[in-house]
Amino acid sequence: MKRQVHIVSEKTEYEWHVICYVYSGMKKEYVSQKGAAVLEVALIAGLFAAFMAIAVPLVRGAQLRQQSAECAGKILRAADAFDLYASAMGYYPPDQKRPDDPCYAMTGFFAYLNIDWWNEETDVGGRWEWDNENRFAKSIAIYRPRASRHQMENLDAMLDDGDLMTGSFQRWGEKYHYILEE
Image 1 (spheres, helix red, strand yellow):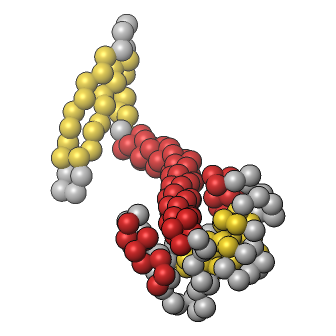
Image 2: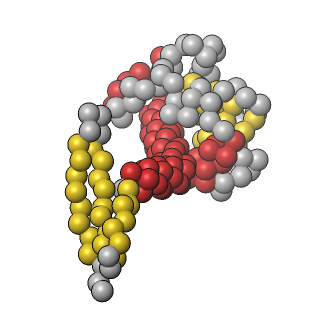
């Protein structure tokens, strides 16, 4: 004889409880759906946790790449401004004597290239600096970034060779320098 299933809902005060009547021959069996619902919720929660374990690092990595790309773009725009200054004046601007000093000589060139972020924190943390009297002669520096070394290497790869010891983007002490002229 074929099995027939009839579902009857019984509403209690606090929950809906479904009881399945399974007819098998002459015997009537009761199968509760309550246990299956708990198992389904646990399975969905486990799948959601696994999804989040995969998705969160991917999203964070994308955010870090975006920060690095924005910072690289700003470095290149600032380099254009300093090169424009050098071509107009015949020399690069004087060194920024104190880190909190704005680059007064660059005000017009920054305005021309819509650089209004020079005195703000960089996209990778830290602050912007112009160095004209250091080991690299003339460079745009990021002083004490919050970014990890790995993120700074990714920034270097966007600008240069990916090696912080060589090329036009290098680490020296607590600063990362984009070298314009040695």
